Length: 204
Image (cartoon, rainbow, N blue to C red):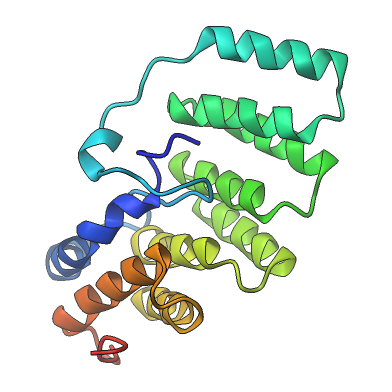
């Protein structure tokens, strides 16, 4: 997955996003407010870069299709193909190939989480949350999944209490990781917005 499109863009902005959303968008219908989601691939370089998707790399698609044609059980090639489509914001195609990769290698939490993110970006909020649960069954300590789960709960379901719980788990497991830092900022946003029951920022 393209490194500048995934959820770590929130590390520097989620405080304000959460605060603004709580204050101004709580009356919006469920699913109407989207947030960038962090996939399992790698850290983003910044939110601005995520705003513009590159064109689909057709040559890479054709190359990976050839690999898969010759080796239909190549889960790695299927994931790379899914990533290529995701990078171009062609999420239905990404979903197809993440699902294909998981049919071959069902124990890959990164692919499972990237699939969930793709569901989120196509408006399939419940399905995204279900897929995050699958990822956590594979790896109960997969902090990228928990971070993303919290964002989808907050922005897809307007469930700040559930989001807060997910982010607190991230901080408890990996407070100094990029995921932990992003989760801390999210929790700061919840606390600053005065959400009922919001705990103080961990470590503050």
